[in-house]
Image (spheres, helix red, strand yellow):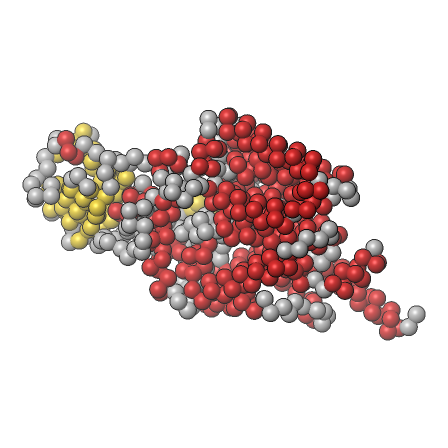
Length: 612
């Protein structure tokens, strides 16, 4: 054996060793990041305190630990790419990556010029999706494209992903049927370190006890986005392995059933719509095996029907109601949607303004004015007549029946004006009356804010009409560069009292995301970066649809077309969902797999088969 040949073998062995390490890192990301929960105590900066709840310390179970795991993955994958470049190994050079790299560059520049560089780097409270996490996403897709080039490595990643998804589904099932595993003693022990053991008995989650599968993903909406990534992979591989491996096909069937349960149990309209769209594409791409294995197809469909009927019956029709509410004409209806944020009001709010210590609040039926007069508060109707108050302990109410929904509670120098369920806090400083949605965020003036569309449909999509109408105007300030990753909450008009009450049911709710991934990108990293991302995604989807329109009985076809369906479903759900540290890594990994088999050279496929 020549020295040159032996050196080449050693070189290839090193390349394979580093590639294997990268595969294991990707598998770790796919399996552990969505699943892992751990309580952390986080001390907030002055800016975060101002735009959050006002607390100096928060406890996070879901998002912070996932962001830290992704940053660790960023470091390891970054070292992998440095070694790969030093060893002069091949790197992806596909033209489709140009818009993705443009997006990354614009995200970096937006961070550098951001007024809130700390948030831009590490992310906002409860989300933690700053620049470091975005860079991790990009390395995940590039690494997947580079190392997941054959069935062996792909299946290591896929089995890791599906095993994790199965566990998440089991947790979701426990939540749907009222015995939430996360709320058990064992669950809390695993989540909460011993140093915080005193918090275990008081630990409660927002969606617990509501027959909604929030799982380890924090929010049922994210559960919907997660399942549209899982279902096409498990279904496609179920058909692929039917005549090749009984064990693998059974595993895929079980994963499909569990993912379907999770898809329904998340009760996410965005996830349901994304799922319906991906099923249409999946049926088209897998039409031949669906027909060929018609008995298995019937068994799968009957399983879906029985699961749907059983879950709908147990939830008193809640599952079918969510499906009906995905119809465009009804998705925005609060009274029919079963939305947990439904806050009935006697009439909508027409305006809410504060100027020169005078707060004016008007609805369709009445108006009230609250004035700071010296060190006293005065109350007047729309004609300027005084409204006679009476006080019960520290709560001020009004004798006039027209103002039965109104009250003012004075507590520790803060006046809480209440209208039905909506609370508007006011503080007093140096002779001024200030609106204070948080303990550190004060406004001396409140008035109408810019909006676009949804004027009479602010509650469309569980308040998304309101969020979008107030988010779209923000884009005019981020045409070239954004405000910085995850800085959305700082620039949203948090003082929009009337809009928040009409659209969300609360005046002081801090809005930290637009519930639309594309608006999120446009505001945080700029409209140009959004265009780059849309070009990248459209390039892949269109090219992949053309590539897979003719069916093939190969692993490359099954996993490639399934990845395409997953990406399409996720992008549809992203119209009403945000990017999130629990779900996005899986999306970027599957997109990377999709790119692998879209660009995989046919001669390379033939060589790999001849060696097997």
